[in-house]
Length: 239
Image 1 (cartoon, rainbow, N blue to C red):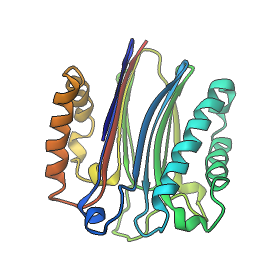
Image 2 (image 1 turned 30 degrees about the horizontal axis):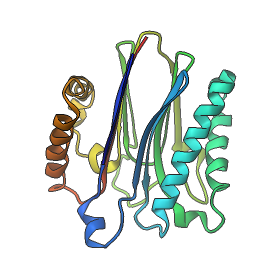
Image 3 (image 1 turned 180 degrees about the vertical axis):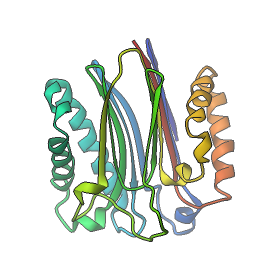
Image 4 (image 1 turned 120 degrees about the horizontal axis):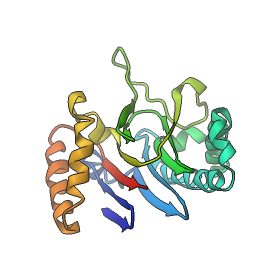
């Protein structure tokens, strides 16, 4: 599934494809990826439902909903951008309020960006990848463990404050950012993460059908390396 947004100073796409693991198990795609423009603000989010959770798909959808509401709230009150702890509480509490039963059965990782009032807010719980270029300065958010672990941090019954990473940076002229669920993010070579921004931006100059074909070929190739669902989103914003 692919969606495009092209208007004035903004270009964006979101793309998601079910992985072989879930196809063989008779399950749906557990990823949810959304870009949306809201007046003078916008947000992009990828929520990757934890495969071992019985209601992972619904948990991922709930995460998308709370990020949308966070974007709306920040648009109404820009002071919230300066209160990182309040943002963390809002996301976790807002997600849990949508779920009436065992939160761990709805567990999901989440990566998001919100742009409002010349500020880019990035957030991450769990695995995945966010790569941003803000006025020619680049940074990366990703879960890096020094040793292999089967534990995946996620929105669930207990969310450690230290595992919820948030960064806010000022962006006056140009913002380019992409994010990917673990099925794609873990296959992108570390040395190529920043360079991929330019590639995706140039790709957006093509027609929609050409872009979709190119993404299909890339993601199908990655499917030979892992059977995870694969989602990616990209946005380019200029003042």
